[in-house]
Length: 226
Ligand code: TZP
Ligand code: MG
Image (cartoon, rainbow, N blue to C red):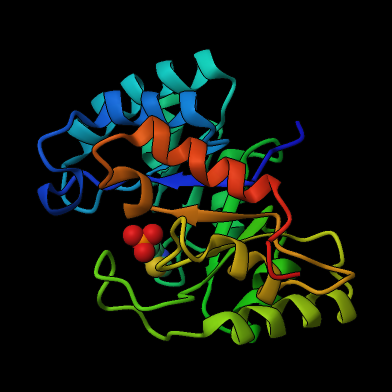
């Protein structure tokens, strides 16, 4: 299945970001607005709650034809039958995740550095979440802020080190005011990003459908400064 990575929504259920909005309704609005892929990221709920919410989210994403991935938790992904997982460097390793989920699953890996990106690419990740691009209150204990130049370097090396088709999204501090710059500055003529992953730009918005729509429009247009 060809996956559209262009506007990747990563959820956050904390009141600081979601406010008093409903999580499932917010995700529904975001996919209606143009989010093409959703990751359910919830670091605090217990397993039963994760499964309960993931089932509801999956109904919404399935109806919209958008894949749903689960952050960190292969067991939850298996229990709900979603399309895949996103794992970080401190989670289950890629090989184990692939063995448990199978070849059809979408498995994404966070890459903070070139070494992590190459290791994940060699290990058969379907996509890389590259960042943190810019410092963000959404995830304060990030290992490193790599900026657009760091993302650019990783994309170039993937190309020259034998992974020209690796799917990539950038994450961290991306919003409507910088998304075009990020796409432009991170890429090269030969290899650009496949998309951007955002949390607060959509989840914290009072109008998540409009926020997703605006981002998707910006992604489709050439930046004005080129
Ligand atoms: N991984 C690296 S930065 C980040 C994650 C999950 C949070 C990004 O949040 P925001 O609100 O889009 O800056
Ligand atoms: Mg993780």
